[in-house]
Image (tube, rainbow, N blue to C red; front, side, top):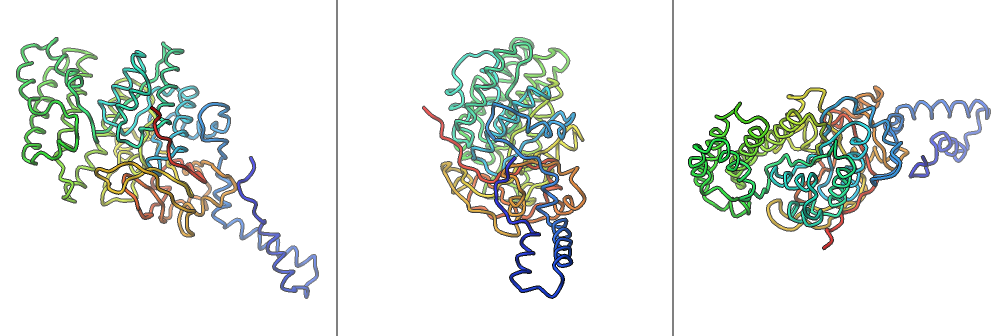
Length: 453
């Protein structure tokens, strides 16, 4: 694959400098050999060179077409049951399309069947219902379930449409969509019915108490309005949601798969209610509940994988899928770290970096609209600056199996840009090898495409 830069090789550059300086006191043959030896020794120590030897070029980030350039990625993933695929911004076209491309490849070549997103559990079930039944319209369902999120974009309509088309052609091996998160959910009456309906049918005597516990909690259709309730009220509702879960769980062993799903849905309600006891103005509360959020995401993925047996691709921000984040004060323990604790080598995180481009973020983390921002090329000293000196425009590498010099470079913490729900954001120190098993680097990105009517 052609390189994306035209660079003067280091040997030629040193020879040119020597000639320009009038270095003619040594015979030409001896001078050329000396320069070549110095250049070779220097290149062996050049971080970009040692990284390039480990890198595999990407033909494209667009889904569809030939995937020969992903064969090495398949080998790197090996027998992992859950793959975390990060993103260095929450709203860039290439990150989103690359996720569809990788997921398609893993479905077709590695037996993966579930795409998980840091989206609420309830919204994930709505999308999955469409994938399994075909009832509804992909674009309308995306607009409803992804509303006010950075995934309310054309790229995710494309993913959902591909998944539905795949299921039409493979009814014996369908793919699934799951939401593993508890942030900004919409727990409507239909979702509560997934729990109360099961209890009414199988344990009718428990239904009055369950309805009593859910009074005042159902529905949750506006997260910000719910957070405006007094903290004491939210804490009381969270306690009742936990009691409702315990009531459902008390019938364990009596309902098979239907019970398992009812219990998991009741668990999601309890998780959400507990998460909404946060006080955004209290830093300590915010930090502890952010840890709780990542723990819940890991628990939901683990439950899904064990219950279904599916291999799962988990899509989330780098700071969620990695073993460690670049902001340990806020993300003291990540979803990736929790997954490693429970799954060991069956979990594999893949991180993204980028050199320059545009993306979606907001002026304030809570509230506001997702809009376009841009950054220029990475400055010297940042991880991305060196990665972009590798001779491929876009590439990936196995951090674990890189050469010793490459791993030594990857193990050093340097400023790296990870942009979440608020911008401006400064680069924070992170050692790539301590966060990810595989790294994908892209030269340039652009903001994701608005959802069409």
